[in-house]
Amino acid sequence: MSRFTLSPPSLGRRQLLKLGLGASAASLLPLSSVFANTLSTKARIVILGGGAAGMSMANRLARRLSGATITVVEPRELHHYQPGWTLVASGVWEAERTLQPNAKFRPAGIEWVQGQAAGIDAGQRRITLADSSTLDYDVLVVATGLQLNYQLIDGMSPDLIGSNGIGSVYASLDAARRTRDAIDAWLAEGGGKGIFTSPQTAIKCAGAPIKMTFTTLSRIKAEGVRDHFNLDYFTGGGGMFSQPWINDFLKQRFDRENITRHHSQYLSAIDAGAKQAQFTSKDGSTEVRDYDFIHVVPPMSAPDFVKDSDLIAQSGAFQGEWLDTDIHTLQHNRYPEVFGIGDVIGAPINKTAASVKAQAPVVEANILAYLQEKPLPARHNGYTSCPLITDIGKAMLVEFGYDNNMEFLPSFSFIDPKEESWSAWVLKDYLLQPAYYAMLEGRV
Image (cartoon, rainbow, N blue to C red; front, side, top):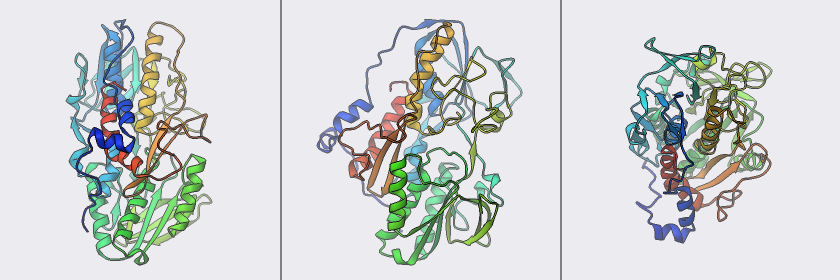
């Protein structure tokens, strides 16, 4: 199978203007950095995680706090642009396009601990690292991201990705490459049974399982062999997407494309050698399906060391699984010196990079207010965004929030959130990545 190369090698400002994207690209990437006055403080700020959320907060707080000790705990030297992994797995991007050194975004004057957090003592305001050393804090920003729980699928391990017809775009960049290779091998067989899954838990980039289904379908149709492939989609929930209009659209589109939908059934076990997958329904009943290719999306939760701490939600929908934060102020509900941002927080939506972009200024403003013993002024409206790929070369830009779950919150007047377009594809393929890097630097 050949790789897809639909996109031109470059798009200059003139081409973007012709598309109507020039002004929006400028709005996505403001070059000016106009910040309010800095606050003088001796506070010890610890940020757990140096990914999209943690790096954004490190840059913002480094600009706003004079005299503070800011420590970021992050083991990785390379920053992964995870929104690009679906494009890698779909054969559209090369893997290297998603990598940058963390040093490129790290602000001067902060302390970078290249290690892994292992425990949080919220009462003592202390972090324990994997090497048993400790860090004390006055303010803690939990930006750890989430944990992929492949072990909750009996017989499944990330090591299986790329073999026995198993793909999973979530595990790592290498897993995205191996998923691409597994899809290539399956399509080269000329036919067969493909199963795509979404689990019974909240997940980051909730559109990714759907994107992988559509991009794989696009490749099958491009080969002119659609009738030789059977596609099934199993989801642990009753719907396809949290935004109602998109949920209805996807149900209709899957039916039209002859992708059989199975709701309230989640992947509970896999026999890689036999190429069989077991699905469990809400009533506890199970059924086993044969497959030639399966895209596995694991259950997800906050990392274990967060789950084992007093910071985890003690009751409600997020009990035992997600950080206990106020979904508007992003301050912890029981420990006011703790703030959460990104995938780790308990919230009805919000596990996207676009959510981090909206949350970062809220956390910044509220931390400054907390340090001055003032009421928290900023509120997050739940804004999240999904560039939902519906075909290789087409996408929909889906934007919504807490109070507007029934409505859209469009950022671009020329992109209709209810229409598939090449403009939305270009936004995904070209413009969102530089906007993301500007977010890491605290510029948007």
